[in-house]
Length: 425
Ligand SMILES: Nc1ncnc2c1ncn2[C@@H]1O[C@H](COP(=O)(O)OP(=O)(O)OP(=O)(O)O)[C@@H](O)[C@H]1O
Ligand SMILES: O=C(O)[C@@H](O)C(=O)CO
Image 1: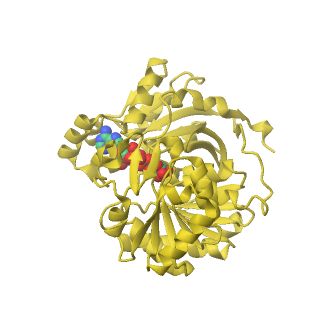
Image 2 (image 1 turned 30 degrees about the horizontal axis):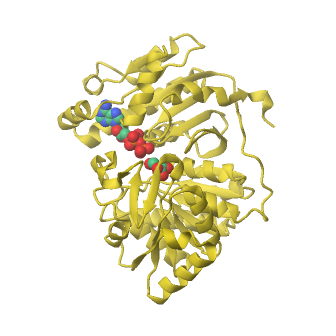
Image 3 (image 1 turned 180 degrees about the horizontal axis):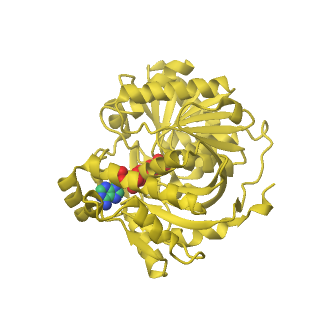
């Protein structure tokens, strides 16, 4: 195994898997712990998806180290810690504490923190994170319900999460090439710095950084830096072209959306306008027993077999805050997650084999309910979102979409990348 990665959420893990797979590495995604070491031995890259972004830091550290131990035991040559391209975290963590613990685990004296993902508009300049053409602190992430990002200066943000001295490798150095970056690493070491935020404006910068980090035991960042790291293994892996279609078992299709992001709500509107049958989950009705997972699933099963029913709980911020103030944020979220998970089981039992899921928490709940543990990576639907295929006894294809990812026609075009099962070799 060339690269072993620990990711702090499930759709983020899929995002990194896609990056590594596109670079030619045979990549598998493991969902949760324990890591099935025997099943991953043949892969070039393995990404373990945890659900550790917003749990207490001590728990996130313990899970991350456990995953890293398993990856190391399975032979991983280099370890990576994957977090969100928008650096989603709080002053308590978990990026700082987990990075620190994994540095201790690997014996790394220095690592980088490189969240940038230029293909989705996440860039870093002079240590400041931009989302599209806005600073992080002026982007929708400033109002994230769990990890509001109100400081765009990542040296400062990370500095609040760890006692390790944090520094910066700026774009001027990166543009001078990998040797200059390595010299900057040495200078940082001499100043006692341990974690370096890295500027990045475009993919070429990720390749430079990747080359400079070839010998680092641990690299941290978003999926973007996976591109640079994978490129270092050009000579040691039998690189294979990224698949352009994913073989899917015969069966029906469905979409389950639990993300309330602007992107997901736009994708729902586009799908509805195109005529997809859709059903909204009414959280108050669920809480009062006037709506149920069984009835929702039965509605989907009653749709024409060749249609793609869309079930969504996604609501705009005002509707969401009304429900949350009535039922509680955690309770209403859990109710929606449990419902979508129960719907998924019923749909699977009725012959649905192709499911598109929107939202990281939602994807975690649904895959757990379906007992999905290991995913093979298929073609890219949009940056950061591939089709995946569950390697369990009951094969299914799943697309796990981060809330903010995907073009407006995502729910419509994704299906064109699936091929009949017979083509699977
Ligand atoms: N109508 C609703 N009322 C209350 N909670 C909801 C509602 N719809 C969704 N939720 C909850 O909001 C959360 C959405 O989180 P999720 O991670 O699935 O999406 P996201 O945050 O947009 O995606 P990502 O984490 O990939 O950025 C889930 O816990 C979900 O159950
Ligand atoms: O890095 C990203 O933006 C995504 O992979 C993610 O982690 C979203 O939650």
